[in-house]
Length: 130
Image (cartoon, rainbow, N blue to C red; front, top):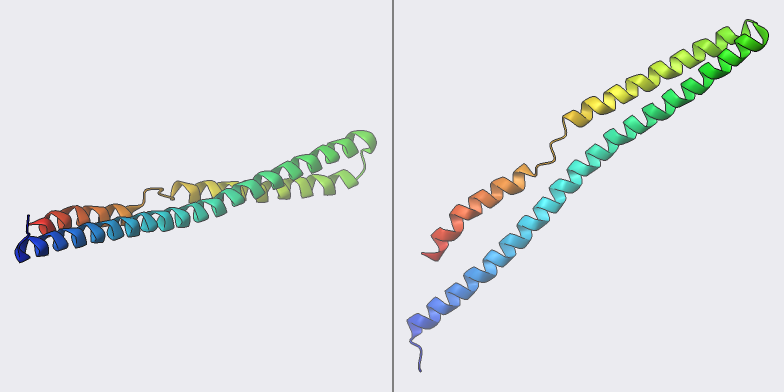
């Protein structure tokens, strides 16, 4: 069976189209990976703030317990200093936890750029097949 020149051209065009679609899909996967990596990086920073805030609040709790021990053991002015330090550490920890939680609420894990690109390609591919 001998192919005509038109059939060969059509066959080659179809092969090129398939190859271009493969490259395009690979690029879209790479875009999704990059976008998700960026979002996870930001979320990781926010989680770090929450973790630091929790650690500071825990440290503040330990200082408050130390202040209580000093109060009960001696009832000396030293407990006032420990109490103030504990309250300040708790306040800072609370602030960091609130900031981290607030920032986490604004992180949208959906890869919008990749989804929009896929929608455009969904319209482009049928036009190329015609």
